Image (cartoon, rainbow, N blue to C red; front, side, top):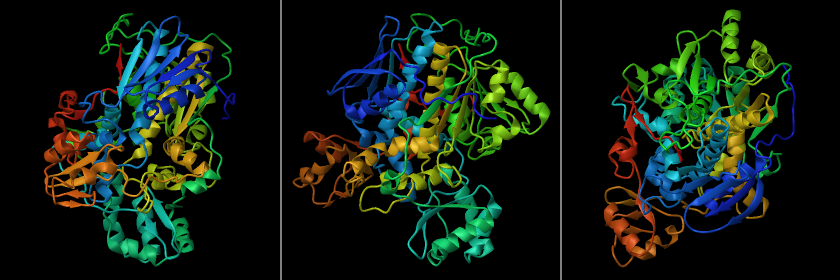
Length: 620
């Protein structure tokens, strides 16, 4: 069914003023998103210290977000993007493909943290309409880092072995005529057929499937060398033919320069108010549940849950939609997962904590579940009954599925005219002929593989699920904007977010540099940790260039600025800090993070024994 109404702009923050202070690295993305939602720029001040993003005109009471580098870790440990990636394990996970820690050349965690700050502000505004009087939300880049590695951390500390061993390697592949490409399929038969068409023995191709299948979980993908060799012996047309015959999807890596020639919307999401209700809107489920009690106007930071009493239905799989709903649950919503008969098969994905997957718990902890066969008429009727009493419905079904089943926004708004209908997709329907809309394919198609690696390194999508996580964050931001718009306009809203939108947010700074005639890629060697006698250290971006000369008079074991073999990590840190340089040790074992004094006090275990990272906001 077509959308009941399509609008070019929907601005839940119309009438509010926006003030910004602090380092642009902490505030720029948040300020941009708040402006896209309608807030009017009242001025900004660049200064050291925390980032402050505040909204004026919110009922006479101030409302602001404080963004810091280190909400948990000591400030001398986490002081910028590079040290945040190193300390929280992001550099370790991203570097698994290469066999050593590597920093992402894009500002991934500050981007994620800015989105978290916007979420907090929007949630506080929704909460104010319902009696939760929060005036400040606080978040930190280190909290964003722990959230980004949450599923990897849960798996590493589950006490069981991974389904496949960690080992360097993985896509992309290169053809005989020099085309670098990614391949994607969710079907093992299609995988084997694709490689058999390229001349790989069926048994060898089949033996590689498990490593390929689990690369989303392990962030590495060791493959037999024969696969790369056969790709190099085949031209691009032959690869495309093999993909067509097998049902696999292939995508040539696009450059950032390619993306400059393609249209890109200003916002990474779309808000579309639905037609005004033909009957009065039912009362929102927006009364706090008896379990939580009514929100107190003076709620303390640890008790403020601005979405308490709202109900979210989630029909999602893998990461993007489940993370969107999980974040809404952390903000207080009652989240109900719609799972197929027999339950979500990912509940059994190793490693396990008791009878549940540690990774699954990292994204679905605290949710209730209902098994519904949406392919059956009775199941769809049951889902509509649940929708009638819900505030939000979020899904990431394949394109066309909702329309085919009669479960699109128009269908469900007829059941509940006050519904916020959220679709978290791969491509948002914006790119004709797009391949399968998964994390790594979107990275390949949008130039992310170039943006996350510095000059001097070949472009390659990260095997860390960057866009699934950032897409889930943007999905929650969009839902919260939709809830606020519903409060202001008294009607339901459709919100669309996508992995494509996440890629555009992440590559935005590089694309703006390229459009201005500057180099789009970070300098060679950017965010490369330094090997020490017993580990690795990472310098802050503004300190890295002075690392080698700072130590020349102290140790002989320096190889450029890539190794400090004559010092332990502790000795190197002490030496750097004596010279006014900022640095931290690199987390290279997620299993050790729960005992790391930088984060130990904030990491807990749930009732299943799975490690849980802290909620990324504090309200007061």
